Length: 227
Image 1 (tube, helix red, strand yellow):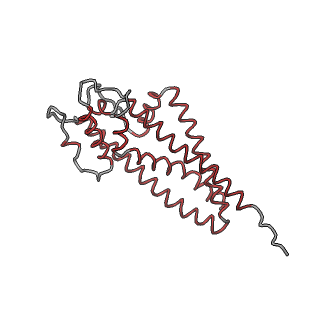
Image 2 (cartoon, one colour):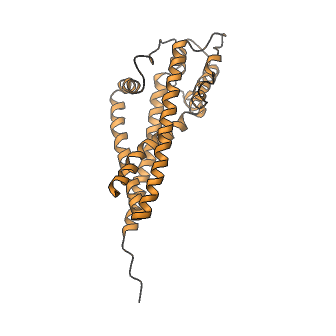
Image 3 (cartoon, helix red, strand yellow):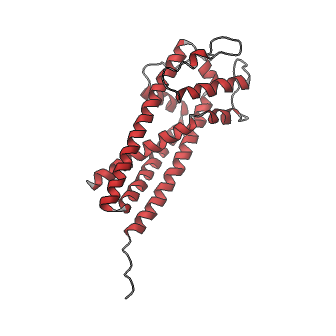
């Protein structure tokens, strides 16, 4: 039973950490930070940065609204044209579904992990919990190293495989002049991936080291009290 409970914590940790950081990045601040970079690609059709950033931030905001909000349907380009075509709107709806499902999964895993953690501490002491958190941090780091190597070798291949897992067919492929491509070029996602991996990696490393230290201290036999 103890091994099973530890495995539940270890497996849940990478998912909870990653989705939490993803949700932090899918807030309007990230687009503003990315667009301020000197080497951020300009719009191929000449849209002003301020207009482009406004559309990007609203598109990201859409992910954090209830489904069916209709926000994207009402957005317009600076010339008054509809910002997104039907294919783009469908893809954003698909992204919203995946985003919500992953958030729900992470929330459930967090709740289960908290309950399991309480059981570990109650039945086997805090060393059992901190040992599981440490191992979960190590597992997270291993996954990051493998994914980081894949992204370093070829980010486009990683990007394609990622979409192939979460989306059906080629619904995520667009023309170069589609608004989604203009707002979110490949560099936007590459930087987001590296940022998410960096934040998750720092937290995972801290858990791995701190958790192991606490575990060893908790397992150390209490010194005999002086006579």
